[in-house]
Image: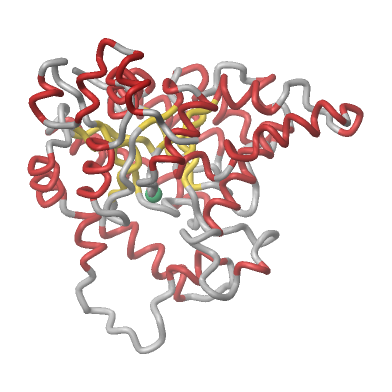
Length: 362
Ligand code: MN
């Protein structure tokens, strides 16, 4: 669909904010810009993951992380520098008027590690992230890591991360050892998120071993297609196995405009209703998606896709994200400033929804 600008302008008293100039926005009070899928890392976890990748294995994340043959291990990597460097990040945020990055440990986080290392490194990551957030609470939020390899320890760490460290939600990078969150062993993790009333952001990683075959060539495994198939499949597994009947208040966030799921919802609903005897799920896919999920704009600067998400999911279920440093900040700010949406809708997507969902300060 296309957005009729005049119709939207007329539809809301906040329409003046649509123009996107600083002064027009200022008349409406401050518009908070809060980006919620912003990657961060630290040297020890990067080294551990690289060592695991170099040791071998054909899991697609290992392939992805393995340095190409002949690569110089001491060559500087600007992407890695940007994951580590919060000062440079802040300078760019200031330049563009970005209020806050909600940081999370970059994919695949602790999920390649053995059980004991994963438990330990999730705590180390959360301690370090909490320090960054505590130093600049108005500029950085944080999503806590946890170790799906040990669900009981994960649940304890999730509690610590919110209650003691003051972090704002959780991040998991899709499957762990080829298992998805619908597996009953992960019950303590879902229970903890629901009890703490904080969302789990299901961030992509490469397709699991069972999905991997057709993603092994042409770099299909990553952002161009594989991430969305892996992560969208994760969401659909949870929806169709009634995870949200067991955890009705659990909130899940998907990046990348919902990893293709929103575009497919009407067909999923159609088959659910057309062949009810074929599905065990008690709730219609769209019913669950609208109640339990939110999506972010990470990686998308495309007005028709945003308009579709707002129309189908409701503006309250769409959050702004950049995906820095994998994506640049500036085009995403320019896109949001210029995209034609009613002022109240833009305000919600740009920061209001994030502040509410993650209980951010300010
Ligand atoms: Mn990302």
